[in-house]
Length: 463
Image 1 (cartoon, rainbow, N blue to C red):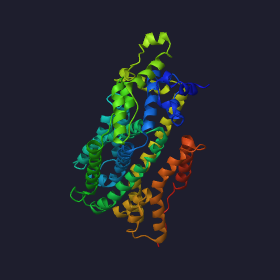
Image 2 (cartoon, rainbow, N blue to C red):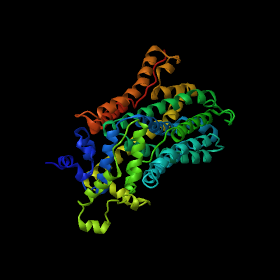
Image 3 (cartoon, rainbow, N blue to C red):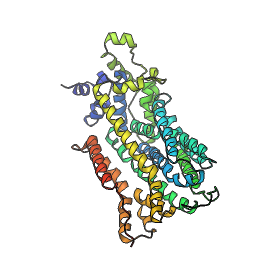
């Protein structure tokens, strides 16, 4: 009999009443981690919490969370893109070396990803979840009033500090509350990424096109004549603060029960689960005794020698030694060969994606403007129309664009593929013969081939 079968057959030994149900056992007893790669007491209690969330099911609380967590994807999409959208008009006004603006913003993103990645394990997911979006909104608004390049770059760097923490925190929060049957929705959350790109490009197009100094002008570009990029910052900053207000004042986000269990606060974790169940109009049978028995069952599997050295108890505080910045945070990601390999691959993939995304988003508008100057059509209207076309836009805006029939068809195709792409990926990760690794491999291969084919852009003949 396998270990999972033993646990299901003898639920009292593990203190998990939920695991008796066959449909829930896979979510309660199977782990992505090897035994011993994480704290056994925490691992056992996490299984109980997983089963409790599965018992509650997907309800109103989780769907609300899908929306407010998506705000983080929205911000993480539109704010890094903004550096490229405002680059050309900001250069005309402040006369600086363009790549330094992108450098400042990406330094903030880098620091934010590290800082909040550690921070959410120290002071909790709840505060980190709200602070990151607040920082982005406040400093985005402030950046709109920048009197010079130094101020603009500094404010965008602090903005990046907040935005850089959105994806790691929001994805962790989402997975902490969603039952195992619906965790594929994390993939579909990327729909908010497409929305963020579309919204930022669509707002930038009229504002910068109509309120900016002309490209190639020989007269000095004054602030009064170049307010378009500032209006864009004010607009996106205000939108981000509105999204933060919805998160903070409208949605009652609970602290992660897994985080609370990691601190030994079992009673608080149980209370959170019951409040979520009540929010969904349901009830939960989870009790503190369930967590205690699970911890005791895991404790007896630890050798007496290890128990004496580490002081293992049924209320072991997994995060107590991690409440400061230590290398243990990083070491735990490489605890076993399997974890080390997975961590290394994920870091490499995110690094490559970050490189490609930065090059594409930050310098695309500048490239289009400079290339357009060579052909005599470097106006901001043309530049940001082309940015909008390359990023995609909904058919309602396409209908307003004076374009040839073939170009209009291309606009429709580019505009509508982003949203169903997210749903297609969410479906693919749940398929037996595709899964997460297959979806990642297929999408990466498709992107590399199509991106290579599109790398040489030729200007179409005039009609």
